[in-house]
Image 1 (cartoon, helix red, strand yellow):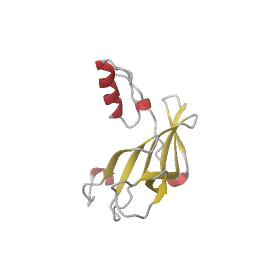
Image 2 (cartoon, helix red, strand yellow):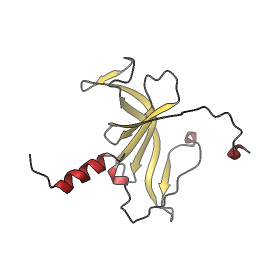
Image 3 (cartoon, one colour):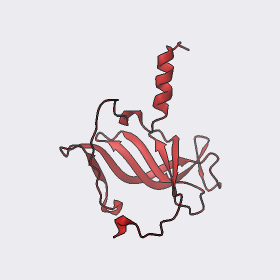
Image 4 (cartoon, one colour):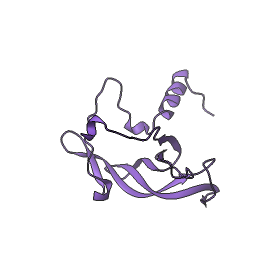
Amino acid sequence: GTPKAAGAEKTDNLLESYLCSGLVVPSGKECILKVHAAPLSAGPFDVTDVNDNAVLHVESRSVVIPTAGMGPASSISLGGQNTVKFQGLVLTTEFGTVMAQCGPSPGRGGKHECVLLCAGGDHFARLSRSEERTGPYPEDR
């Protein structure tokens, strides 16, 4: 392979720690986005800049989630890899390029948990609720 400079390897490792390197705001810069607050049942929506220009798009669609080491064999095989197809959320650019995906975590026995996937479908993180809300909370009043 081609040798890399020491700084290039460090940059590659840093970029791998982000869900989507295309969404990283450069150091010293600021990005303000407005996110739609309506329920997802209202349909797809745009994430806009402060001037209401669409910069990202969120929609519900089928998400194929790799299940390697994640639970029961209620999965399908896609290119030799076990996967599960769920209805999830997909974040795209205004041109339709997938930036990230989110869907329910397969094989979790009804727990409130979802997985975040990079654009290509690789696992990035698992999100779960650590405790149930019992209220009252100030925002409930």
